[in-house]
Image (cartoon, rainbow, N blue to C red):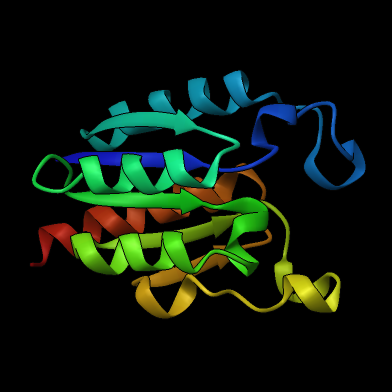
Length: 145
């Protein structure tokens, strides 16, 4: 089983950006922990990060017929990107939206996700555990197909 983990805009600034919200973990630290967890689950993961909406769309499109599931933290694009939403819908790969912070407890504009309606689920507010919960949920979903 292969799962693609996509991180969007500003996620490369983890550890620097608002550490009171996101902690001191860097993107590299996050990826290392996710690779270790993927071994526990017995799955293969690929991680990807981009600050560019079109690159994220292209990565989702490239996943078609190459990936069993997607864990997506579109970050700020969650609230604005019809293009990312349409890409997820087009490839029809089970996708779980994740956020490290609870987007429903943040500013009003962050509480609306354009992506959630085309995802199997949304997990937010648990820091890195949001990703682990998403990986586990995708494994369960894909194993029960």
